[in-house]
Length: 180
Image 1 (cartoon, rainbow, N blue to C red):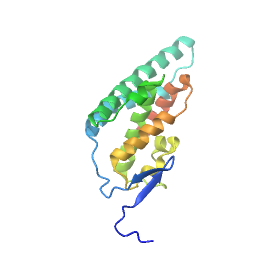
Image 2 (cartoon, rainbow, N blue to C red):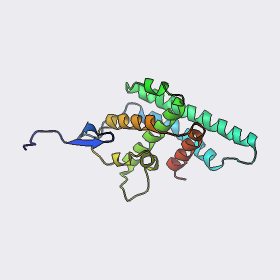
Image 3 (cartoon, helix red, strand yellow):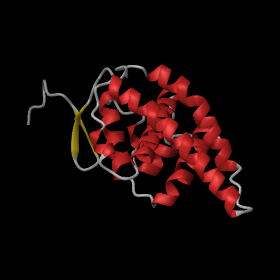
Image 4 (cartoon, rainbow, N blue to C red):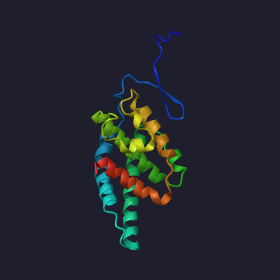
């Protein structure tokens, strides 16, 4: 079979066919601003996750409330980024735990950006959130960043976490991202 002139493809999750992009440097509009705005949120989430207070019911509730507020802040930032890049967020708004799913998407995007910038390989430590979501193989592939965003959106919508576990999952993900 003659394959001359055909664009190579990458198959990823659910047998979705993505066209390989020889220019994987495709930019995501507003990604640097997104990283700047989310950096303090990630730090606070990581610290709260590591210092989660389980001494009394009141302190547990206070820490859960803090995780929820920070997750909502992260969700707002990723919503802005998605809108800047003309992505439809209506799928997120249809689910009960949309803020947590959006926050989870933010963690996935930040993990991808961090791994991509550092040229992390399978043998190195990193991309902890991407691997947990089952999309760790994205790093190092010649796939455009807009295609990566689509894959990460799907991954965050598929993620099944019991409602009470979302705050801790987001906190633990932030701790991983922060290098704790």
